[in-house]
Length: 236
Image (cartoon, rainbow, N blue to C red; front, top):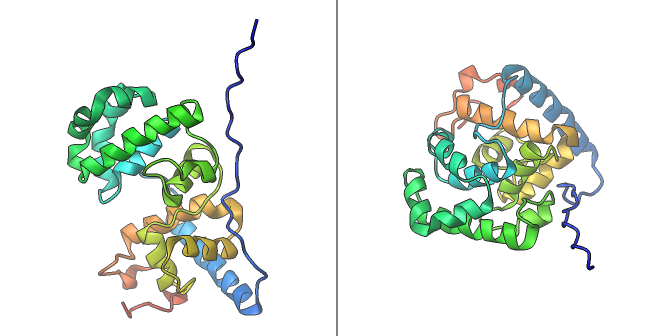
């Protein structure tokens, strides 16, 4: 009697990008970066993922929905959606029109529906119905770039990664931690400055600072806990 094929398991994979040797100026920057992060940790001790989820699949869907939408709005849409859709097959059973109607208020709902349904189909076809634990495999899923992959790995699987959203990119440049604008390059620059175990939490902390104080247009420099360490203070 033939044996059933073993269920495929996706190997865990580090999210670290290639880096070179550190120069003396970079070591000095690393010291300052550590002091900045310590102060931000003290200011935002409860920083965490603002998207509500229970499973890795929930988090994938919530992150897709969060594009060009507030986390608060996403969290209003997802409770009933997550209750009804526990597996990738459940999303596919809604069909395009059914899912579009459920997520319409998050904006760009047609593109998001296409990504979610395409992603769920790929999860079923290529990954035995479960989100993989490898960044290389996650980024092959529709709607899942490195940012989303790092969100999933860091929060659902405990595999550390730096999530470079608009807040993290903006604040990293204002603090003089990097001059780079490409999110992947910013991620690599921050990996050089901070210990790997801190990567996921530093993302939450910097995002919290961006939302509370370091606004894109009107940063509240007078209220900033790291003002004295910020080369851009009062210049934005």
